[in-house]
Image (tube, rainbow, N blue to C red; front, side, top):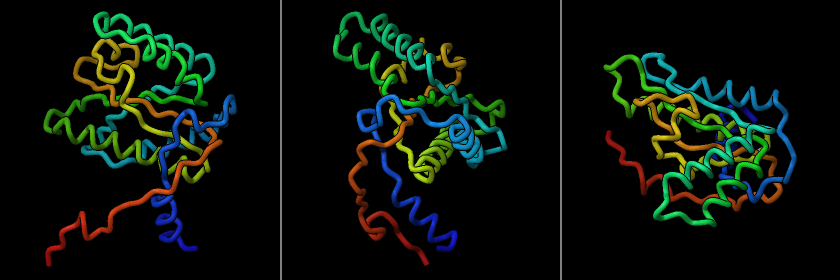
Length: 193
């Protein structure tokens, strides 16, 4: 296969794989995680600002993340607290080999719109997805948990103008996701010329 065929296959076979689909307790080699994170940093970004801020949790760090998010949820939802959500926040990170907190550090260049920094981080996340697929691993990007809670930001090294854009769970695949389906390009693309 040539490079184009390899990439076409890679892009079209990318799937979200959830923590319940991971091989329990099986860790991804640190060298592979470092390669995946290096690939993430090669995403396009306006003004070469590289607005991503990743915090990678593994080993005992997964428990630290789980405890933090469960307790923050409990603290910030006294009126709507749900025990099931609290337990899920404590357990989900422990099912993964690694969890990456996805942060967007606001560009120092005020001429760059915030949406462009967010888009750059999203491109970095797509590089993570494609890298996982190439390595035969699974993962998914979630914006659940404490993603939108302002009080969470300092834990992940984020400031007032930065954003926590979610978490990326990584693991070895025990149960593959079902094949994907997309509408034909005619449904989503308008050609001019």
